Amino acid sequence: MLVDSGRLHIAVQKSGRLADYSRGLLRDAGLKIQNGKNALTARVDNFPIDLMFVRDDDIPTFVADGVCEFGMVGRNVLEEFALDQPEARFEVIAPLGFGRCALKIAAPEATPYRGPESLAGARVATSYPRLTRRFLDERGIDATVVRMNGAVELAPRLGIAGFICDLVSTGATLEANGLVPVETVMESEAVLVRTLKPLSAAKQGLSDNLWRRIEGVLATQE
Ligand code: PRT
Ligand code: ZN
Image (cartoon, rainbow, N blue to C red; front, side, top):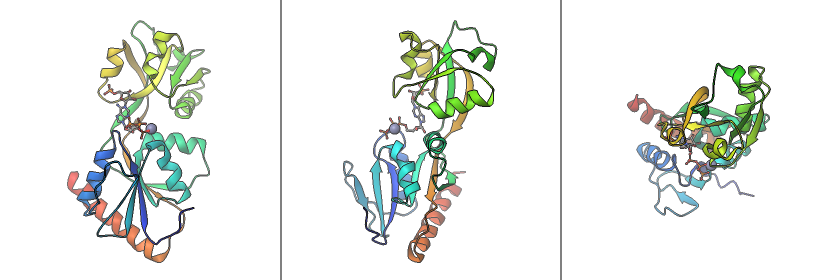
């Protein structure tokens, strides 16, 4: 268990698409982050704040449990988590303007597609089974969701599924695999998320201060 040291904890992706942007935003907000790219944590010199470098998939859990008071994570990861853990308590404070992408259903070019009803009876491979299931359920489509943890775009070629549901930014990966998007399940970008666990007065003040600083940076980016 983490002892409440009175320090605030921010969960950011250790490495990956959000990592540099997340640290950059905190630096722009005036936080002097100690170096050490491979460390699991970093202290902030000028505020009682620690950064925790973790897998993006773990960020919602850390924030909901209050282990970290703040996190920066893709809305796609957060919403998939929330569908699995409806009792998890956190609030989305703001979109952060980076990590933009869309969760899309795609199929091989030759697949005939006339709308969501074309998905009836199909198999859809995805790393986002709950978001995909919700999309299908909302449209009353009976299809099989096949969970894959990576290389989802290979599923049609391997005969695992006729459709995929995956994140798309430039569309180059779909194209390289002979796939075309047919439906958008959700638009996503990185968001700032805050725990709903009650904070001590000191931490609440620090939390408000941090958010004001981040808000200031975001305002200059509009
Ligand atoms: O190690 P860790 O678990 O932390 O990282 P990760 O590998 O799970 O995540 P990472 O770094 O790949 O992505 C982190 C977040 O970035 C995602 O959750 C999204 O919110 C966001 N993001 C933005 C993307 C993309 N764009 C994106 N294009 N995440 C993944 N992709 C992948 C996509 O899955 C596909 O394989 O990129 C490929 C498609 O890209 P295009 O440009 O060819 O369309
Ligand atoms: Zn991940």
